Amino acid sequence: MKVVVSLGGIFFSDAETIKNVAEVLDELAKSCNLYVVTGGGERAREYINIARELGANEALCDYIGIALTRINAKLLISALTNAYPEPFLDYKEVAVAKVKGDEKRIAVMGGVSPGYTTDAVAAILAEFVNADLLLDVTSVDGVYDADPRIDPSAKKYDKLSPTELVALTMKGDLKAGSRIVIDPVAAKIIERSGIKTIVINGSDPRGIINAVHGKHQGTEIT
View 1 (tube, rainbow, N blue to C red):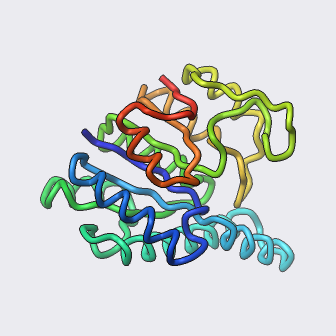
View 2: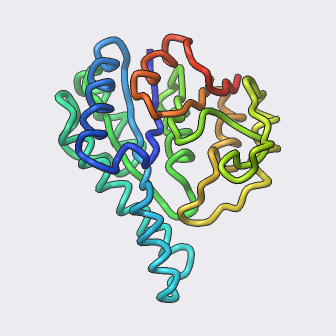
C-alpha cells in the first residue's frame, strides 16, 4: 500500500515532538510504502511575516516558506531510522529512487515551487506515484465550512466528495503561510486523480497509523 503523508508544521516545534512522530512513521513504513511531505509551521509563518514587512512579494515569501519546509524535512530525516538521507527536491527524483531502492525506506520532501502549499505538493506526489491514500495531518480534526479556530459555529464534515472539497477551498485565501486546511490546488489534484484522502488532527501521532487502517475521527474525501 502506497501512502503519502502531508505532515503539518505542528510536528516541528521541538525535538520530542519530532521523535514521537518519527517513531510512528518508522512503524508505519514496515507495512506501507511511505512518502512524507513536511510543512513549515509557525517558524515559516514568522519568517514570511518578517519578509512581508521588509517588502518581499508573495513569490519570494513562498521561497522562504519552502526553505523552512526543507529544514523541517531534514529534522524529520534525522529522527527516522530508515529514511533516504536527504529531502527530495522534486517528484521524479522520489519516484526513481523508490523504484531503484528499498520500498521500506521513507522518502521525505518539503516544498517544491512558489504558489503550491505542502498539501498541494503532497497531492501531486500522491498522483505521481499512484498512491492508495493521501493522509493530511493537521492542527484541526477535519475539514470545516469555516475556520473552527475563529468561528465556533463552524460545521465539520465527516465525508466530502472531491467536488464539494473544491467548492469549499475556493473560499480560502491562497497566500504564503496560509492556514487553510487544504488549498484549492491540492483540492483540484485530489479531484482529478480520485485519490482517497483523509484529513485528521495530528495531536496524537498514533492517529496516523489508525487512519491508514480506517480508524479516524477526521474527514474522508472519496
